[in-house]
Image (cartoon, rainbow, N blue to C red):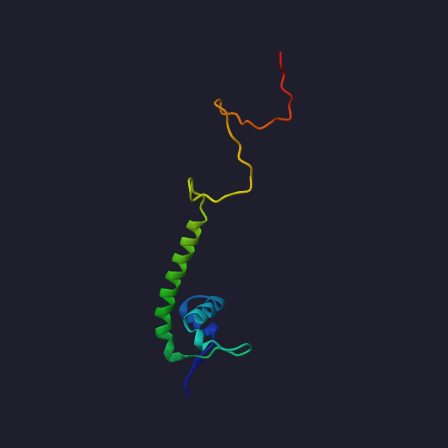
Length: 107
């Protein structure tokens, strides 16, 4: 009989937690994913292959996260995100031209 591992046992072999291991298995072996209520049964002979795939998967995942984080940074120019806030124009003295709540004093 072939020894099988649960995702939790495989996670220990991979040096991660069970949740991350299940995410990895779903993304790497989508056709082998058990149906609702079913259980994963990973054959022990697959561990070596899955370890190397897991390392590659983690690197790709970290790179994707870094790219996503880089996309969230606000940049100046055409790539800056649009906002619904009204624009405030400054006059030559660097003061905004919006009306203030203080009445102007005239002589």
